[in-house]
Length: 114
Length: 115
Image (cartoon, rainbow over all chains, first blue to last red; front, top):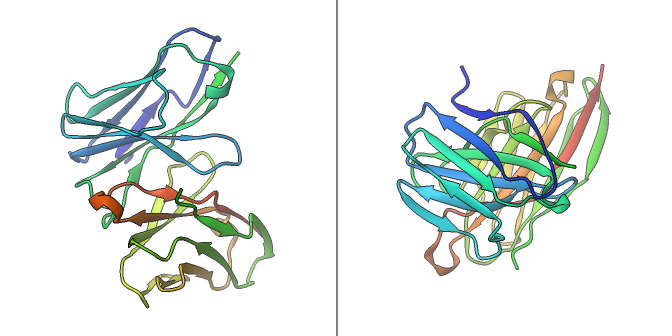
């Protein structure tokens, strides 16, 4: 059974049209992460939540926002998508914010921007 | 800037071949190294989390070694099977500045095993 679920699997949006990607988890983990992976590049951390505490990476564009209304759900909002935001977006969870424990990933949302 | 390099970028082998690939990372401020297997249309799945220099871990036909002094880890697959076809990602975690939760990924090694 999937433990980290991302919807939708594929998302197409128009240039400048806001889009929201969703992630849910059944693991009751405290930490949820959003990674962006562009074609042929390494997954890059955008931000993470530790419980309700939001931690933004310094180089994450302001265009990207996130919400975590409860333990189970986390959303990635892209306010005005540009062509350069087309990528695979991966959600992941961990029990604690320590690199000593493995991450559990969803299967990702592939975002296309037309 | 922390950089994680994986080689080769891609690898094609025949069923039954053994194979290995490399992850190189900064040798200073090491905290942990992760290996993930990512099959197409599925979720990346953790294979190993390694924290100690000289660590060797094994899961079935897959094993990994870690050298933190020189900054590399090897992943070995013995007797490759078609179901091993996937992208193998490594991720380095530094303890610089006290933050130990940020995984820096490599670009992965794409393995294709021909039956």
